[in-house]
Length: 413
Image 1 (cartoon, rainbow, N blue to C red):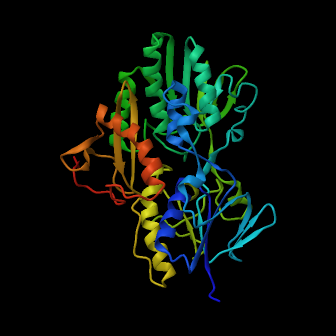
Image 2: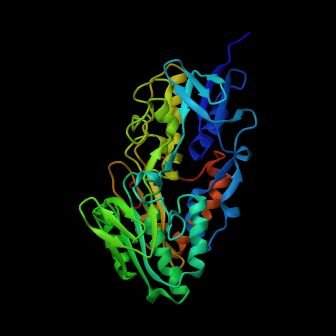
Image 3: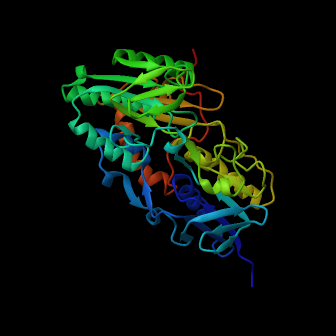
């Protein structure tokens, strides 16, 4: 009897689902057993959470079952992982079951941890303090906004890194449009606080986005590191003594890797796994690979990064399996649509070494999307991405974009 070689994937979110599809297509069913483990049956289209507070999407628009997107001939296990024993090559579940592996893919993502910020999750959580990075927070904020008659709306980022770095900017742009359409924009003061020194991390994008904030009368408070929230007096405090008062606080809580990473001794202080930023292999174990938000690579924690890096990882895993040196290298490629309100959006495309530049994407000169521009076509691209995500990305159907960032069509001035 032939020994079935085993691959275990921990996490069936965006990254894990894509890798399950890629690996099943690439490896012989008679030689390789693929198991994917996740404690939740529900798959959320997380970029859609942004639209829920403003009535653009409902919960039904962003929810599907995970098994719909996973190959039928893999071993799908709904269970909680107690820990990963990477020395013994096994995954231990809380129910006592053990899954041995030859190769492991960790795709456990990251979660919001509001309890990490003193005062945040006390009496007023989901009353006048909200996140929109969870389905519960986004729905609660929608209910609040429906009847809110104005005041000071503060959007704040606690610390880096966090999922989808452009989402807080999109939130304030959409809030500006939402309250304008309701006829009460003059009664809503919008403030955006960030630990960054500007609206974004890259100079050209920061200049463009900062100008948009000014045009929309949204006050930017840079270099603001949240130390605590005084929910009784509606004030957020920074570590250097600055204060910002609010009537409604929308916050990006601290983001951390899954607790299973801490229990397994595989992560850093934030439970992110030290990972080679080019090969996507664990720095500590040669048969362990890390994909998506679970790693500590210096790229955006965004769906596009999971997509582009998965294209690289499949090549490296197949080479490793076949005893060959890894030749595929991830360049940190990310691209993000940025909703700017009133039916328009921008688009940025960048990697580890090249900041967002102006130009056309994905086809030089033709586009149709404009980089660092602000257009209705970009907005349509953002809306269309939901269908692309469900029908193409998760199922590993080919998209007409390269996993490597190209300078074609970009203006490097």
